[in-house]
Image 1 (cartoon, rainbow, N blue to C red):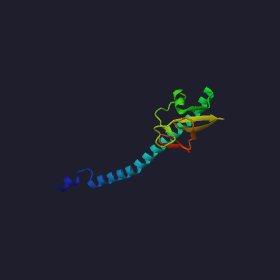
Image 2 (spheres, rainbow, N blue to C red):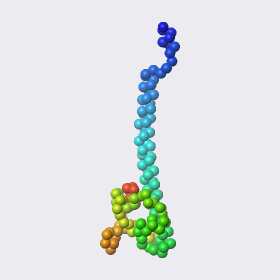
Image 3 (cartoon, one colour):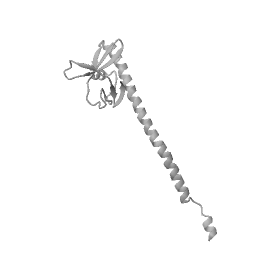
Image 4 (tube, one colour):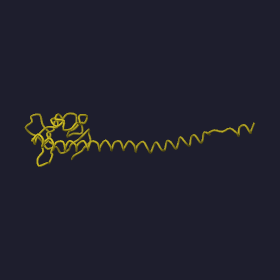
Length: 134
């Protein structure tokens, strides 16, 4: 009877527990690292979108011989296609009208008010809630 019990092969509970603990430690290290990586890549993508908008504004200005236009005009003219992105001067970029002014190849963004007579220079710009300027 003793020989039968000794000849059994398998995994003991202690060995199984050791493997589970090791996998838990690896998961505890990997998950936050991957989460941070995804967040950083989204921020980089939003900054790249901003760069594309600035370059498209320069091209639009030259092509249309226009120094002042809105972000909506830039998108409508299909110089750039970022319709899924939210772009504005506040972290909640849901509703905002931006005027782009290109002068001497320098691109500036202005917040447009409802009366359209006064505009203020945007001190910060956000794409999808990520601060890309200011």
